[in-house]
Figure 1 (cartoon, rainbow, N blue to C red):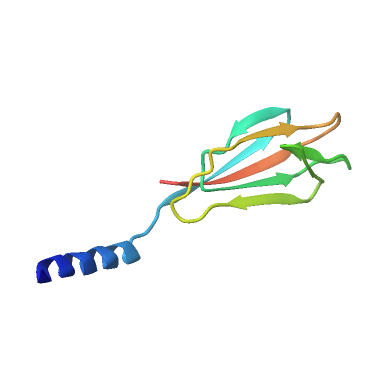
Figure 2: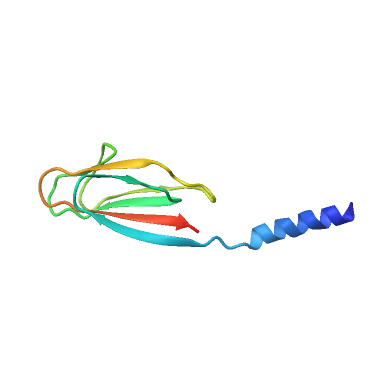
Length: 100
């Protein structure tokens, strides 16, 4: 019984002290595309040179603005995001946090 209790305490301490490793991935998109998120957190940053918004799943993203979506610990976003761009010089930067 004491052995089981000690094992539970050890497991709790190990979980508390564990470090989650992750990688940050950057991607620049200049054309319409559907992307898989497959990550813990994702950020869309509009770097467009005109005033027309880029659409992320239908949500307008104006130049200089961002949409940030983050998950809790040990969660993984599996959403497919559709990036639509009106005519003109458009760029969107995608930043992903991928747990290892």
